[in-house]
Length: 391
Ligand code: FSX
Ligand code: SF4
Ligand code: F3S
Image (cartoon, rainbow, N blue to C red; front, side, top):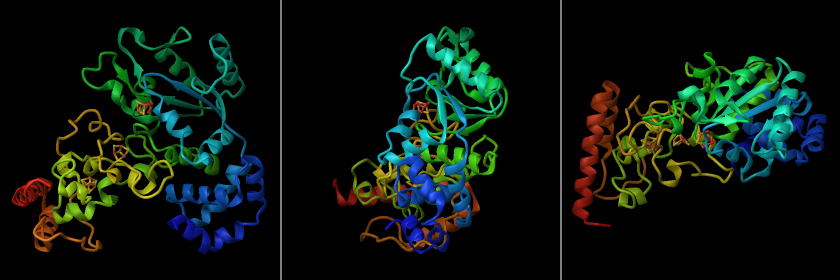
C-alpha cells in the first residue's frame, strides 16, 4: 500500500469526504471513480506541501471552478512536455488536465490546421482577454530576427509577445522554455532563449526535460484553489517542487554517505544499487522533487537514479545540457542526514562506519573537502573492486 493510500484509509478528513457532493460531482465531471479521484487530489495536496486539511478546498476547486482558457504555444522542443502529460500510464492525469482547463490552442492536439487555428487562437484571446493562461513549451530562437522558428508565418518571438500581452499568467513548461534547455546548448546557433528572456519579465517555470506532469498540474490546481500562483524561487520555479536538492531525498543517499559508489555501469557497485555520484550524477546540485514524485505512476524506482542512471540535472540551468554528463557534480551540501539506517554492507567492499562518520564531519566543514573525500572514497572502492577482479 502506498503512503497516500494508507493516509486515505486512516485520515478523518478523507473519510468525511468519501460521500460528499464534491466527489459525486467529480465522478460526473471527470468520469473517474470517486476513490481514484480522491487519491489523485491527495497526491496533489502532498506534492504542493499543503496540510491534509486543504484536501476539501482542492477537491472543491477541481470540481466547481470554471475552466480557465489555456493557450499552449510550442516552439523549439521535442514535444516531450506534452507527451509526458498525455502519455501518463494512468489515464486519470490526462483526463483531469483536459477537463480542468479549456485548451483553446495546442498544435499537437488540435484537429484543425493552418489559418483556421490561428483564427481560433485570436478568437480565444479576444474572448478571454486578461484571463487566459499562456503555456510556453520550447525555447524561442532570437538570432536573425527569429527566422529559425515560424508558426503560421509569424516568428516565435512575435507570437509569444503577442499572446503574453493579454495573459493572466505565463507558465514556461520544460527546460527549453524555462532556460533554453537542449536547443540552447553551446554554441546555440539559433540564439535559443527562454520565455522570460524574450518577454523581459519573470514567468512561472516548470523545468525538466520533460518536466514531471504533476508539477504542472499542481501549479494549475494551486491557481484554481487559491486564485494565486504558488510561491516561487529566484528562478521562477514553484518552491514546493524545486525547493530541495535531489541528493537530499535520494534513496541511494545512504551509500553516498557511506562512501559506496558505482564506478562503472554494470560493476558490482552499480548492480548493488550504490550511489551514482562517481558516474556523474548531478543530484547534489539539482533542485527537483523527482525522487519523491516519481514518473509514470508505476511505483518505486521510477525515476532516473532509481533505474540506475545518474541524474543529468535536466531541471537545472547551468547543469543539464551544459556540464559534461560524467563530470563530478558540485556538492552544494554534503552534511548527511543523521537518521539513516546503516545500509547492508558486503564484506571487504566500500567504506566502514568510521569512514562514513568522517565523511559526515568533513562534509560539514567544507564542500571542497567533501569533494576530495568523495574522490578518496571512490579510489578505495576502485582498489577493493580491482582486488576482487572483474565481476
Ligand atoms: Fe522536449 Fe519540451 Fe525537453 Fe524541451 O520538454 S522533453 S526538449 S524540455 O520543451 O518537449
Ligand atoms: Fe543519489 Fe546521485 Fe546523490 Fe548519489 S549523488 S545520493 S545517486 S542523488
Ligand atoms: Fe531530470 Fe535528474 Fe530528475 S535528470 S528528471 S532532474 S533525476
